[in-house]
Image (cartoon, helix red, strand yellow):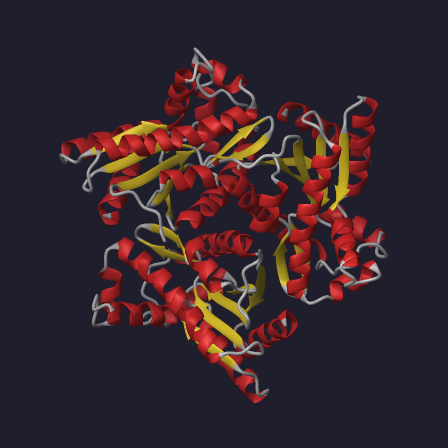
Length: 205
Length: 205
Length: 205
């Protein structure tokens, strides 16, 4: 059986610097102005709130110093908490948007952002990949050094990460019969990418 | 445990315009002339017959207007019906060939043609990708506008679709320990691609 | 729930000719000199010992002549035997290194080396891909014709195999929430690749 939530569930992913959060802000504005019932959640926020509740960390920065297996446990706990939140706050007409990554590059390799235990908890209808040319992402990362923490390895490193994100998204989508939806975030026009995501939401219904 | 049917099961996939149906026709002729017991089924036909039986549609064209979640349900129902048909019609010496797609491009994104719930129902020994150079596929699509419905986005779009088809096929194959078998359909020589598929069938036994 | 062994488990993969076995030899030396408890196992050896125990073969070469479905059964039996060996020989502080392939090219196609039934038995923390430029791998294969049996299809064939290895590794990693860790084996400097794997092991703890 295909696992689905009563509400439409869209996971929005993108590599650091692609402008995903700006795009999601525009999506929220558009859904708001249309009077849609929706919820945008940030996966990392839920990991932090689960970790705090368990008393494992006090500050967000402490999370990445937790043992890896504990981080993986948090990933699964966050997925479950997000689904429960959706069930509480959204009816059949609602839309859940989850802001996260298809793949995360760390010093221990490329981790799937949506491994089986997470994606089967979230039950998405679609996994969105917000993309941009590697050169553009690189420039944005250079401008925004404070916020983008990880060293992604220049334009070639970004190209590799984008490629792993695609195959990771497809592997996750295969587990839950979701679609993979590519959205280009053209420099300076995040509202276009947002409009394409709103279009997707309308069609998933 | 590795899931397998008593008979050899080969899923034959290819993007629209690659010439898959022609190749499968040749495969059928070759198996026929060798006196093999086999069954070639079209996945879409089974989706339609399941949908008709349920009274959800009367014409094939109505299928793509069904709600997406119903289409996904039909996909799973078709997979089960195909396996049952194989069990009825084929013994241990038989071969089941399933004509379908590794990935389907629609306005809601790239959908896996063989998500977990489908591929575990079909239980293939091998997933074949019939491929051709993007430029050749593009030309065939242009010649055959009536039949090939979807706008695939030019040569670049076809290249992207071929790439997603490969990663989707590998993701599906990983779930059932099947192989991914690449066959190039050289322009004007579908019998060569067919011969390679017949070779595969002989070796899977 | 994320499946994990009590000990750290790292699967080391690489295409024939990439120099994986040399690298793993260096990793063993480094772990030895640091007084680490570890176990390096070769997946093929375990398949052979399982096959011998069952009386299915007497010589290693006979294995590839077994029916394909029996080979798949052996693959799963080997995975279980390896995990049991790890449980017997390693405590929580130990490290299990499994020498195998992410994908295997044969006349019946590209077979996943870590299909669901195998990877969920092995329960890796990380899947390492030892890589090198296709041209370098090709040269090594040419020098070493005796040992490298399969015809991999020249530089283009190696490039394709490397690409399938990446998507297969990511598909397997998605099933068990493992990372995919890329290590380049630079010609003449296997100790650098080995050092990167030792670094990974330290960080996975």
